[in-house]
Length: 616
Image 1: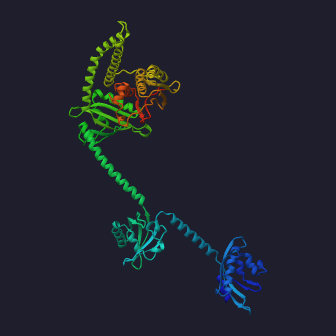
Image 2 (image 1 turned 135 degrees about the vertical axis):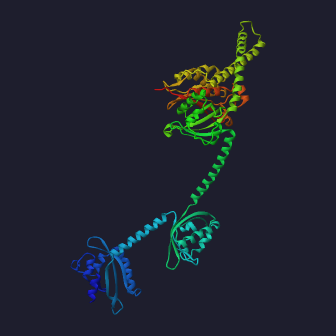
Image 3 (image 1 turned 45 degrees about the vertical axis):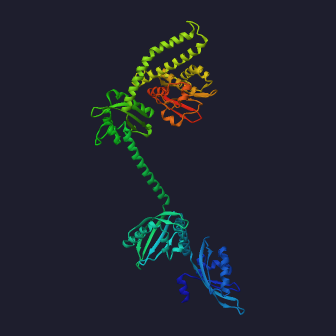
């Protein structure tokens, strides 16, 4: 009967004479390790020892000793044994001593031998899965949890991942039975809303989600965001399964964004007020699609109702007929230079003529397929009227002075030459001063007349391919005597052979000469003025660098204005009319280029301009 039961359970059996080592195994014992008893014969205790895993023998021996000394009622051991196919199988051996020798030593021991390989493998897989889950939880930035709350207010966290310590400053075990004290850590301003959200979720079993602050023991306040799904339990309590994460950094970003947004709105309000006061509007236009956007001030400048939809065609219809070519030329020039800078007249719907100044930039073509211009427009009517009055006055004075001044210069030159009569020594110095001042006055008048021609578009330009090296060398040669007077040397850096530029040679000389003379005047004695030219994409960059004191930062915005002088006393000592750079800007722009500068106090200045390179 007992044998039938054992056979049915697929359990191996063994009998062991502890004193002699004689051992009896049943067939199932041998089968577990892949053998028959005949294959194992002869068998004794060494049969078992030879098949057992070496690492498990020590623990097995300790368990036997505990049983033999009466400290354990049974021998109970799980160990590995080597299967015939070379693999290791797990077995569970249980047994006890059934007889003892007369002197109290263990004699006969009976037991069972069960194959638990599948069970052990399942345990190992479960452990691996649990370890993997724990690793996942450990690497999750937030906290996975179960929160349980009873109708009487009791609360626990049946399960909480280790990150609860970061969130609330407690260990999972501290809140497993009682979690009510965690609410003491909630920011007072957030406690009522948090409690209400939990009660609402419990009442209708709706998704719980809330953001709130927690005050940690180190006086640090953090923002948490929680989300959990509720489940009603048989005892009436509610169990939530969810996730809480630290959103402190995100919340700080949102708060900073909100602050910046408020500052932006305030700045926008100030800009709108300034825009209305100065009559400056902002616009965006596509030269491809014809789409146009206007800010409210532009409607006011152009005299349109804001219900009208603006377009490029509408804008062009307002441009004064005599200025349309000027505006079109500036637009085309902006495709090359990226800058649209033009002052022109418009005709409002009521027939009034106003002057406006447009300033805009065009992004590079590869970034701007619609050829979109973004810029501003300002009503400059009053300024232009004043300018016209001033230009008319200057033009009249210039023309009226030119003829008598020419006669005065000629007379002084004749007297200084000594051809009429020898000039007394005492008068020579006074005559030279008079001659120098007449030359300066003549230069001023010539500059004023150039400004007038440029403003009226009457300055002739003969654009052709010009050799860069030759033009720079000519300008340097012409100014060598002037540089010698100031004890300044001019250095021309190597220019690529054959480099040409599209320009009017005479006007190019005028620009380079003006920049060079300025650099010489404002450089200290024994200093060097560096002149260079290089090709940049489809343009040629000319640069003149001095070793002077630099240009004051507050004067940078005015440097190309008419009669602009950073230091009146210095300018008087160095000479100059204050018109040279303004003329340079007009000349460069009308040759399809742009001009600018860089300067650092005490480190000199570099003026540079770009003109189109020769078309290949």
